[in-house]
Image 1 (cartoon, rainbow, N blue to C red):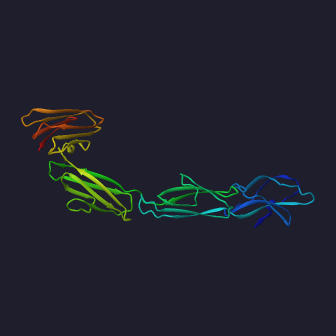
Image 2: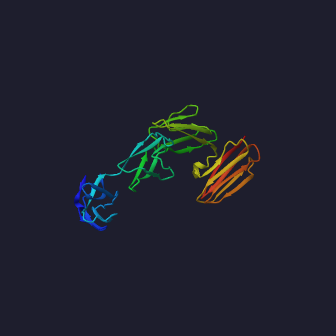
Image 3: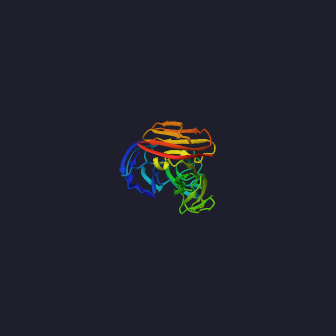
Length: 317
């Protein structure tokens, strides 16, 4: 296909041209000239034409053909193109089954392939996780095609859990799950004695509970939660104050606090009213401690914070 918009007769070796052509995204321009109908020569195989169709260039011919006309023109041919084939084989976030292959047309070999992110220079990539992959392909004439390709995959399964602890073996523990990501809907299978199949289990004693979550694509996620016997202090001051276990079996009472808004004081009294342990917990920090109790028996725990006073019975067995 030829277009003589740039037709010009000249015998010099250098000539500056400035003209406008109608561009087409399916074609690119090759600058060429010929001396007569039997002598054809391509000068430049990849001219850039801006969005307005403006061409500004200097043609430097290798010879001056005295006595003959040289006719300069633009030749249009199919653009150098890269056609990707993307295989989205990832059903789960962790899968590595994505593939990308590239097919080059209308350029001149050899091609240089460069993937961003350290994926090398092959035209075929396999074992890909979900995400964006960018590649630059250049033919021997310096014509470049840049592509951004996406391997699809579901988002990771995310679990937000609310755990309510037990109080003195009253079977008041609860675990409630809020699941997102993956491919809904979800199936639940707990390891408790009832083999529950919902996102909420309750009437729990202290212990560790494991749930296997399976999404609609068969992606499996295992997660575990611990319900402990507490002194019940957390029910008054919130989850950022935890004192456990109750009953105590190894004479160790645990204290955990998380960035309290005010200072907290703790006192433990034995069966005849003597103070045996005292602690001050400062506000604004994460605090953890173990209290070694004097022996078996019944103790009274007194906790004060922000004008509130809570008293609980602690049993050491």
